[in-house]
Structure formats: C-alpha cells, structure tokens
Amino acid sequence: MLDTILAITSFIFSCFTLFQTHKRDKQNKEFRDWQIDFNTSKENIRLVEKQNDLILAQLNTRVGLIPHFHLALEKSDIIFDSKCTILKISLINVGKECACNIYIQPFDEDCKIPTYFLSQTGSTKNIVIQDYLNQYYALPKEFIYFKISTTNIHENTDFIRFKIRYYDLIDNLYEQEFKIGYDCVFLKGFNLNYYSGLPQLIKK
View 1 (cartoon, rainbow, N blue to C red):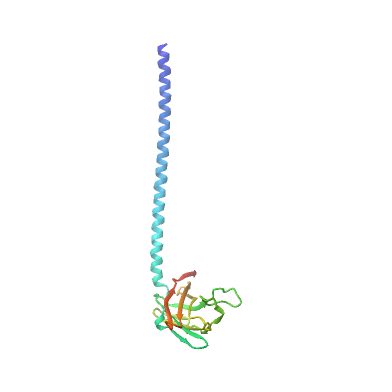
View 2 (cartoon, rainbow, N blue to C red):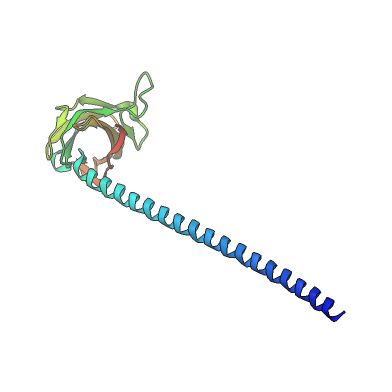
C-alpha cells in the first residue's frame, strides 16, 4: 500500500515537474522571441533614423545649392502719384546654381483670368503687371526684377503676395512665394515686414 502511494506521489511529482519544465521552456522561448523582435525593431528604428538623418543632411546641403531667391528691397523702387502706385520688385538668387525659365506663377492657374497677385486689401483686380521680368534666368548673386502698378491709391498701406516658378540645371521645377508691403503715408516706401519663402520642389 505504501509502495502504491509512493508510486502515485512520484508520478504526480514527475507530471508537475514536467509541466513546470514545459511551462518554463515555453516562457523562455517567448522571452527569446521577444528579445529577437525587440532587437530587430531597435535595429530597424536605428536604420530609419540614420536614413532620415542622411536625407535631412542632403536636403540641408541641397537647399544651399539650388536656386533660391530673396526679396532685395535695396534694389527695389516705388513711385507714388495721384493715379497709381508703381512698384519695381527685385529678387536676388542667393543659391549656388543658376535659375532658368523663371516666370510669375498665378494663384489660380485654372481660371480664364488668372490672379497673379493677392492684396491684403482684397483689391487684386487693380494690380497689373507693368513690366514683366527683365530676364528669364538668374546666375548666383544676380538680380532680376519686374514692375507692377496698383490703383489702390485710397489704401495707405498694403501687402502684396506673389509666386514665381523656375527650373534648376537638371530640370527640377521649384516654386517660391513672397510678400512685400508698402506705405504711402508714413514710410513712403517699402515696409520692412516682408517675406521670402523657401523653395518648394514641384516636379523632378
């Protein structure tokens, strides 16, 4: 009888030990699998971050190289008279590459009568191009200009937005937006609150 009880106890203990061993092996396997997945994910994240850093470095380098225009108020001019205001707007290519096929880009190119200029006063119909761009290319550090006239003479102050597009030497198309302001009462000239946007890649 005692032998039977010992045998049953030994059997139960063996089963329990086997169960615990199997459970521990399963847990160890799950932990190893988790470690493998974690290390794989960690490595993938490291590779993605490295790739992002490389892309960011390339973009930062590229922005300094591609054609890039700034408003040049020192080369701009403004004439006030009783009928209209004439603005000569100058831009300088501060990039290290030549800009080609430069043109003024409308805000609504799909319209029959496109809008090339947006006015803070909302009177965009009174702004017209008097002289188009003096040239369609710009070498590094070279100026280009165009003239517009506005009959919004009842407005003491106005801000005008416009966009240009141009190509680089490998036929990438870029777009930039600008904002220029003027005051015909106090400053009698251009407002220093102007804006030159960063080039946006439109088409490669």
